[in-house]
Image (cartoon, rainbow, N blue to C red; front, side, top):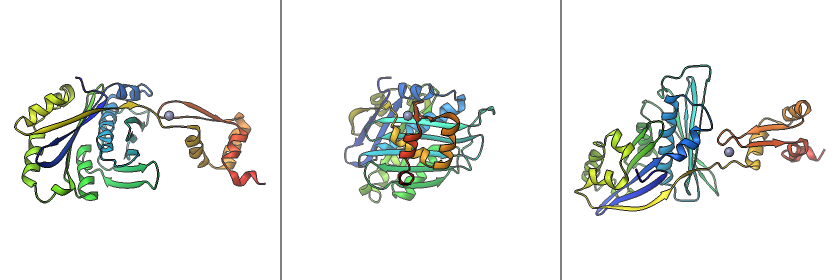
Length: 281
Ligand SMILES: [Zn+2]
C-alpha cells in the first residue's frame, strides 16, 4: 500500500470522465486518537473523511469542503473537512452512555458546505434515504451539478479508502456509453482491493483496456484549523451575560477544540473584547 494519506487524480484519454483515489491511514489514526469512538462509528467516520477528501478535489478555489451527517439517534453528528491544500480533520458526537453497535444513517441529513477562504459559503442539504453514504453523495451531485458521479468508500477502522468517478460537464450528453462502461468496471472492485491495493494496481485491474492517465500524488494530513479567533467567534454565540457568569464562578472561560483537543482560555478582558458594543459602556 504505497498511496496512503494521499489523493490522486486520473483521467481517461478521449473520454470526458475523471476520477480520484484516496487512501487514509495516519491521518485517520490521528483523528481517532483524540476520542474513544465505538468501532462502528470509527468506520463511518473514516468513510466520511475519505468522501470529504474526494470531494475537496472538486474545489476550484482556496477554501475547504465540510461534510456533516446529522442523525436523530444515539449518534448525532459525524463531520469531516478537507481543505484544498490537503488538511483534513473530523469529529463525531454520540451518546457515550449507549452501546453503539451500528450507525443508522436513514432518517438523517447530509449537509455539504463549500467554504471559500474569501466569499460566501455555499450549503447543500440532501436527505439520507439509504445507509450507504455514497448513494447520498451521488444524489447530491446529480441534483446540484447535474453531473453523473459514483463513489466507493471503505474503512476497516485502520485504513479508509475512496474511489470517485465523475462526468466532466461537457460529457453529460454525448458520452453516455463511456460513462456506463467505466462506472460498471469500477463497480467490480472489491472492498479488500480498494483497502489494500495501490492506485496503479487498482487502475490496471479495472481499466487495463483503457488509456488511463495518472496524475501526481497529493498528500493529505490531519491538521486542525482552530485558532483563538475562531474559538472566540464560537463562544460569542453563548452570550455576554452567560460568559460573565462563567468568569465570576471560574475566573476564566475554558474551551477545548473538539477536533484536536487544543486548550483555549479567555479571561475577563478577552471575553469583553469579543463584544465591542459592551466596551463602550
Ligand atoms: Zn483544533
